[in-house]
Amino acid sequence: MFQGSIVALITPFKNGEVDYESLAKLIEFHINNGTDAILVCGTTGESPTLTFEEHEKVIEEAVKIAKGRIKIIAGTGANATHEAIELSTHAQKVGADACLLVVPYYNKPTQEGLYRHFKAVAEEVSIPIILYNIPSRTGVEIAPETIYKLAKEHEHIVGSKESTPNMDRISEIKKLMGENFTILSGDDSLTLPMMALGAKGVIS
Image 1 (cartoon, one colour):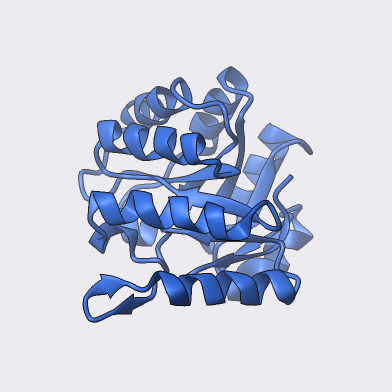
Image 2: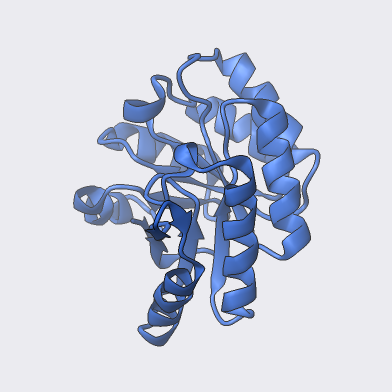
């Protein structure tokens, strides 16, 4: 479902406010130039620095602008589980095609904590979920076994974005998950090596 070149969009600002006119221009550019999907409110979109209201509105406006012409993946991850649930349910309500859920950052939860966090979100939405592993930013890595457990219990957990140089990890996820689970590179320089191991594209 999600593969190829997926662009992690910036969140444009003007005079301290989100510039929705520029957001529309960016989305139109990617529609016209063959981008496969767009991620809004990810790392590149500076989601941790957006207010909750800005975060929700950027997702909603992106869906309205796209009008079904390109898939919109909403970055709805948060350090607080209740916030991730609120952002994800809102994204589903306004018509986003999927949610990208980053591993909770700063607190370094255990694998059981990660499992419970993602499980809680998955139980509240039915649109596809892509997990986001970026240990250099979060301080903790979600184990392949935890991904397997979550995806086995929740069919709409369909993939993971991997921002890690650990190719053994990619092989392990592929072995555990099989062909129906989508691995996406989160690092330009590692996209080709990851695709050689079975990844289906890149979010960058």
